[in-house]
Length: 304
Ligand SMILES: [Zn+2]
Image 1 (cartoon, rainbow, N blue to C red):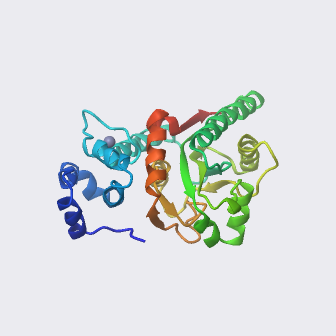
Image 2 (cartoon, rainbow, N blue to C red):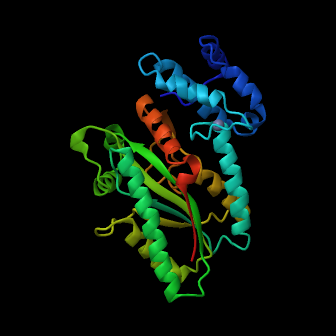
Image 3 (cartoon, rainbow, N blue to C red):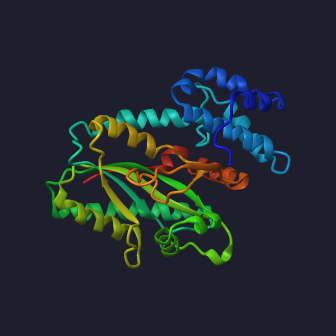
């Protein structure tokens, strides 16, 4: 599985198409120099489009829309490295402001996994309901504790889980897959919607209450162990660095498979980025999110 595309491979791709790929890299060389993962994500998109546009032409059109993206006429597609990095920078600045009094001791990184579905409409419905439920439970909390002052800011993401990933997972992760609705008998990939967010300030004694609230907003049925994780900020970094990194992470809008269901689990194995989503899934996901209002449809923000 290819995760890296060299300059010479990129030149080869560029010469095989009339779409001006290298011009796009040139136009955005400042971004690509400072952010290598953006550059690789772009090259992987190019590769995916060029390998597949004959059997699936819409992917070629999608790539052209990205190539046409300029500061004046942004494409706002989640697969566009320029639009994505702009969103990441905006979120970082805004979060540094929101969390200017945060400390590593009172700040947490939330990951909440939501029920899976093979249908994209269903998946966005799950996200919309989750956002609504979160606002509701936090409003109720605020009524009980009017002096609380917690900010929760982040973004939803659509992850795609395939049967291969299920088979490769640990027993604990498989159990979690199943509890979240993954149906291994169907032999089809399923979308795993989830939320990443910064939660701060939070006293240690409030953590379990907040986790329970998020759990109750996440699933109608019984709690699923491990589906909601609140992780303390890393102590080996200063707080602003943590905020910047997590803000970027929240808005990475991943279009590649990862081998770790908890993507932030830095204590254990770091998640590796594997191949891009299959071409049709990639295309339908990008188009679906564009139809929902693009990046803004993924945002989560509340103050309690
Ligand atoms: Zn763009």
